[in-house]
Length: 160
Length: 294
Image (cartoon, rainbow over all chains, first blue to last red; front, side, top):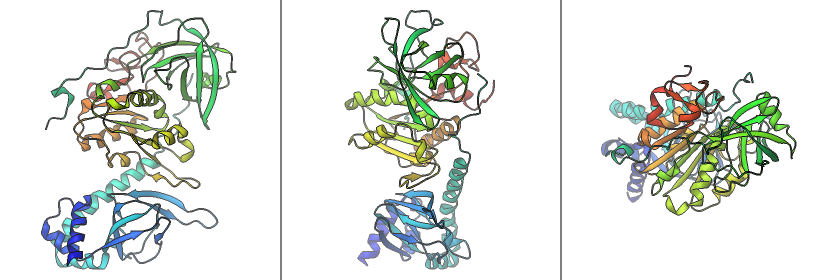
């Protein structure tokens, strides 16, 4: 019981849950666990079943793609306050990147099957959850688009 | 809560003034050092060759550098304003003038006019938190302001630097960034758009760093320099963070030729960027900020 209360506190402190009412937090706490990954640990592998997602409380995570014969390519890094992973809501629920703890990472792990079931049972909860997820996905997509623009590249050569 | 400076009006950026000499007459300066910073970026260190005094400048001002027989370009001063014995300029070599400058031999002469333009008014941030937000080569014009704040560190609250670059190889002033990061009284956050090699730092757009904060949303002043797109979205992030437009300062880049507001090449609405800028308080330039061609 004490453990669940501790997780609720951690959930309340995480920016993702800002705007969730107590009832929703109580419901979701049943799907939450505490997670810790030492520096260098690859705790998510591309292609594996996406049965969890994480809310980072401390540390940095690199999302990577493995390339044969060379170092992994870092696609993006995520850190304190970030949500890590949305493959759990997109069939076939498989991870699309590796995730490596760049430093010690502390996070709230959320059981995906548990969450999907609760959102299915309570559509208001599901709607609330998606209301919080979709802006994050949109912001992440926007940031990737900005990086694709390569705005720091030299401007076209002036006619001087 | 009204967090704007207008409620407690701070000073505007003082208008640019010249030091009394003919602003159109270049002074000869000796090239003391040419340092290659990045694959396409270099720093030129100059000292006066005419027996006159050093150039006294404020952070954010620029000089017109004249490669004799080739042409003249405006380049921000990137050195310490409190050590005017050597004046440094950091820029990319992208045109014929900058190509000529990067190939200048040590000891040869170039012409210098300046300093021109408005400056980063770091003095108005005393007693408050300071956020420097730089993108790419935009760190160069901000560096003198960072030097000034660090030289009077006790006068400021939290100081944070957010810096975004293209790749790890494109990080300007890398040693200084590391040196600043090792201090206990300043937070330095660096990210790159694209990781290469064994980069173990952040990968993401610079605005993603701002969310982490490290500065008070009600009593901070932000100084931003970089590509205009990067500045536009950094401003949006700061506004979301709660910062008023009169607490945000940006440096505009336009095609400056005469540097004294005569020729009109750098006109932006009613503004001449060379004379009324390049540093603006954002609420004074907001209406023009999204106008790309005038």
